[in-house]
Length: 187
Image (cartoon, rainbow, N blue to C red; front, side, top):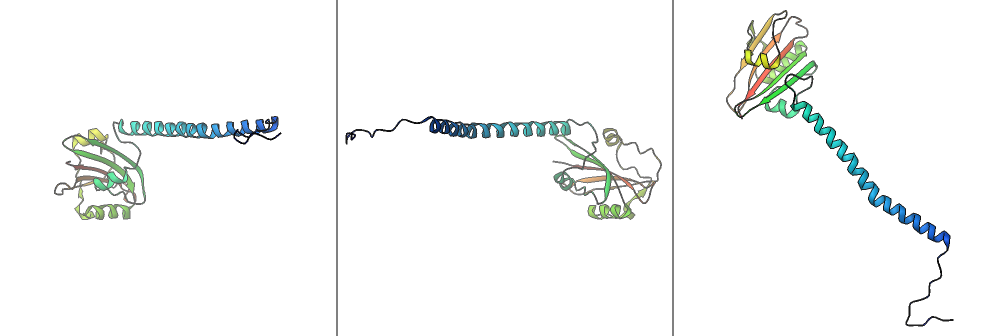
C-alpha cells in the first residue's frame, strides 16, 4: 500500500541491534562531551593547587632556602651565579623602602673571577678581613662569618636604580671559595 503523498513517509520499526548501537554511540558522545572536559578541569585544578603550595612555601620562607634565585631576580639584583656553582641558597625581602636579595654559593677560582667581572669589579677590589655585610643582613640571612678564613669583602655601590652589592668571600679553601652576597635596590 502506498503512503499518502502529503504525509510523512512510513519508517520501518527499529530492530534491537540498531537500537543498541545507537544507544552506545549516544553514551560515547555524552562521555566525550562531559567526561573529557571534567577530567581536564580536575587535572588543571590539581596543578594549580600544587603551584600555589609551592609559591606559598617559597614566599613564607623566613631565611635562606637551598634554591637558585629566579632568573628575573638575578637580573634585577645583578647577581649572576657562575657555572659551576653549588651550595646555592637565596632569600628575598621586599618592603616599600628597599628590596634585598641574599645569595650564597660555592664556586671555583675561575667562577669567582667570572662573577666579579660580571659585577664590574675585579679580585683586587676585595679587601682582606673586610666583612662588608651589615649585622642586620647577617642576622636576617643567618650568616655568622665566624668560621676559618681568610675572609675578603667589598661593597659595590652603583647609582640608583642599579643595585648595591655587598660581597664577602671565604677563601679558607682557595680552590673552592664560598661567596656571600647581599644585593639591595630601592624600588
